[in-house]
Image (spheres, rainbow, N blue to C red):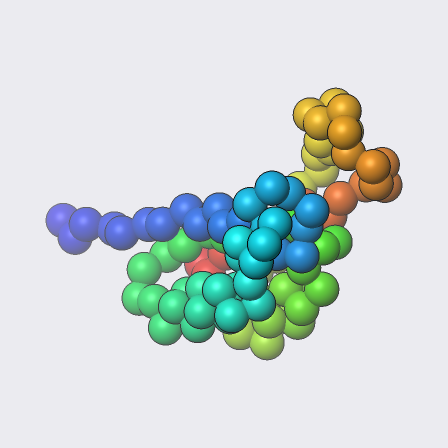
Length: 96
């Protein structure tokens, strides 16, 4: 029986106001490098992200024929300091 390799990718949310993005923590170059790596990967993967703050994510996923699964969830109670109370667009993108 062949082994299946699967990877779950949860990068920092690009263009967000989290502490890991302060002082250039997760840059556009990092985001592009990750996308390039996933595009040539020969393993099945799932990428979790926020489409609301990552404006090019949808076009990238559709351009490569990846599936976009929209998650029906909110994180309004997770951080009382969150200033933007509008609903996030949480997605799981898969290459399978």
